[in-house]
Length: 347
Length: 206
Image (tube, rainbow over all chains, first blue to last red; front, side):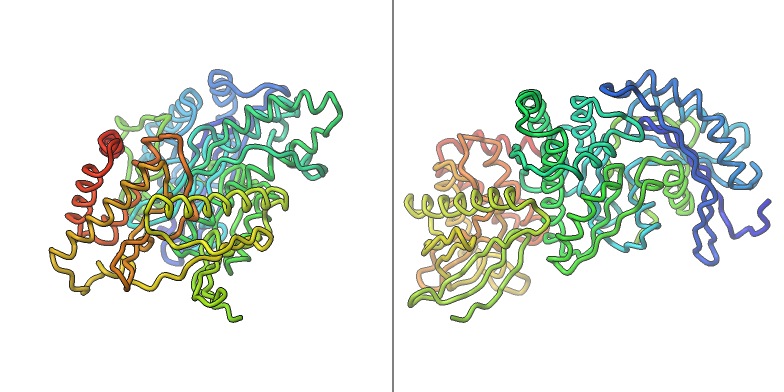
C-alpha cells in the first residue's frame, strides 16, 4: 500500500483499436518523478489477409480486459484503494472496442468510488512520448493505423499542422500486407518492415504531398493494381514492393515534418504511434534532422504501440490540473481531434 | 565567385551570388539524404522545372516576378534576379509608418497581381507577406519564392487555399492591417472574372 500522500496513482484503460491495454503509473508531486508500475497488453490478431473488424475486436476486448486488468494490478503491486483516478480512452478510435473498455472504466469508478478521466488517445501518445524521451517542445509526428498527423504545441493546444487527407499511413501499410498475405502477428507493419529490409529494387510509386498534408489512398490503389502483374512476371519481389512502399510513404512523412519544423523554427522531432516503431522511419527522420542540426526522439514498442500506460499518464496530467469526467459525460467518440483538447497542464 | 547563404528553408538553400554581371539569387534544392536517390532526383527535378515554368509564365503575362537567368538541373539550382526592395512583411511591421493612401495602393497592387496570376491558372502555394515585395526602383509589386507553385486545371479550391494562406499571415502577423486584406479581396474580385467562385470557396472554408 502506498504511504506517501504526495504520490498520485492512475489506472489507464485503452482499447481504441485491436489492442486492449491496462497500465498503472505514479506521479510523485514532491519530486516530479514518474514511475511506470505496470503496462499489460493483449492484441487481437486476425488471420493473414484479413483486417480486424469492430465487432470481433470488441468481443476480444471484453474477453481479455479483466485478466489484463488483474495482471496489471498484480504487477504494479498496489491495492485498489491506492488508485486516485481511473483513466480511459474517450476516442478517437473504433466505436465498439472503445465502448467495451469504457464500460469497464465506469464500472470500476462506481465500484471503487474513484473519479474518471476520459483521455484523447492522440494526446496520450504525445504526452507519453514526451515523458519517455524527455523531448521538451518537439514537432510531433503521430503515425499509426488510424492516424497520421504533424503536430506542434502552441497556446494550450496540440495544433495540427498537417495530416492525411484520406487513410492513415499504418492503414496503407496494413492493407498492402493483406495483398501479400503477410501475417498479422505481431503486426502487419512489422512484417512489411522485415521484408523491406531485404528489398533492393526501387519501384516508382505516386508521391502525394500537398503543402503540409499527405494522401495515401492513391498510392495504395496503385501498388495494389501493379503488384500482381509485377510479381507474376518476376519483375520484382514482394520484398522490393515493401521496400518501395516504405521509402515512398516515409519520405512524404519526413518531408511534411521538416516543413513544419522550418515553419515554426523547431529543432526537435518526436515520433509516436504504432508506425513510429519502424526503424527505417526513425533513421530517415534522423537523417533529415541531422541536415538541420536537429534531433529525433522516438520510443520503442512498449509505448509506440497502443497501451494503457499512456492513457494513465495523460489522464493523470489532466487530473492534476483539476480535470475529471463526470459519469454522465463518460461517453466515447469515434472522432475526437487532437486540437479539441485544452491542454491545461502545459505552459 | 562568392556565394552567401541567406536562408535555409525546408526545401532549399538560398544564396546571393553574382551571375555574369548581375547580382543574383541562387536557389539550390539540396539533396535530401533520407530520400532514396531515385525518388529524390525525381521530386527535385520535377519541382525545379515547375518553379521555373511558373516564373517564366508569370513574366510572360505581366506578373512581376524575379527573372529566371539559368536552370542548372545537374546542380539542382535556379539562378534568378536579385530584387532590391522591401517585403510587404517589413512594410507592415510594427512601427513602420504607412499612410492609408499607401496601404490602399499596396492592397490594389497585391489584389491585381494575384488576380492575374490566378487567371492564368497558377497557384503560388506559399503566399505570405514575406513573399511579396515592393521594388525600390519603380515601386512595382513582385511575387517571389515559387518553390511550392504549380499550374492547375481551373481548380477553384487551390486558388481559395492560396488566399486563405495569405489571410492566415495577415491574422497572425499583421492583425492591425486586416482592412488591407479586405481591400486585396475587393480588388481581386474586381480584376478577375472567376473571382466570385474562389471567394465563395474561401468563405466556405471558414
